[in-house]
Length: 87
Image 1 (cartoon, helix red, strand yellow):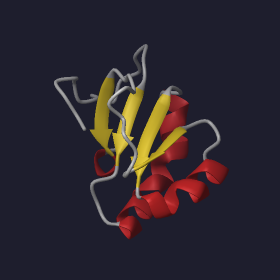
Image 2 (cartoon, helix red, strand yellow):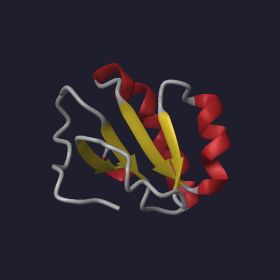
Image 3 (cartoon, one colour):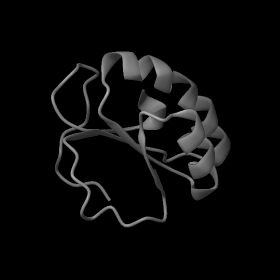
């Protein structure tokens, strides 16, 4: 899924930040508690999470672009990325 694009360093930038959940579904839920704080720093955010969480995340995080882990993102353009556990 990821390519040579840089890992996010925590600083605001112009562009889309892609967050991906490498962990278990429960860990993705736990780490998602920092997303509200993230949106105070950077607003253009997309996240790839377990497909069972997609509808929950869509209802909870209306300002995020939400993808499930079984979707094809080959045409999705983003500028930096980071695993959700590194937020």
